Image (cartoon, rainbow, N blue to C red):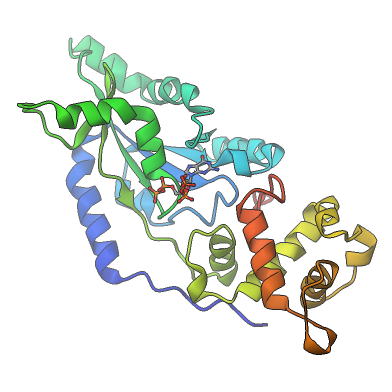
Length: 289
Ligand code: G4P
């Protein structure tokens, strides 16, 4: 079967991220990792835990507005079983973010108690935001600290380190997210990242991506095919390419000789998915234990 070619992430980028994280980790109490709620595994970076060592980490399942809420709830449970607190959020509208600081405080409760005992409870909680490109790091930082972020930079004579943004009187975040590289050894991971738009279309075969997406829809959400006037019965048993052709045919995307313009059909399917028109659709479910 044809595969999405491996996508290059330059060693220089990785080295830079590692350096940045190593330099700043000693100053933070917790690492906040953003992932795409539609692909909570593929949007992670397997090297992150070893990079952050014993530092606390929480996972934000960002863009939860675009994922299937039932599947997202299962992910939260799955992460919990694996010892990691995860929270679904929508950094575009801010939905879910009011639970963020309480979660951070609860994860850091031991540290905060120790600080209180030492009389250092006024010390702010500091955090670092990390995640793969396009996962929503800037949106999140802006949501949490938008106006304050601008204010700190505008005030003349501010002596404090500008890298820190005040979120509330006792919480600060590093205004420099760590850009993690995604990992593509498994072609399915690369495909899912590309379907969600996390990696650029130019480097991947869009017809292949649309075929994979349609196949996933047929398996998990067959009723959504009605958007293309395709019944689950019609879709059943078709090869992935035939399903893409059927979408194009139903939409009247024909070229001379009555053939289907599958490239146009693929662009349509991917655009509609990314634009949320196909509904809230998760592309990964938690692995079975
Ligand atoms: P990054 O810093 O991690 O690279 O990501 P960034 O915040 O730039 O976000 C990338 C895209 O994802 C942006 O869309 C942003 O609006 C969108 N986004 C971020 N968080 C969420 C979320 O929780 N839900 C949804 N639905 N979208 C989110 P864009 O198309 O690049 O820009 P625009 O749509 O904001 O104009």
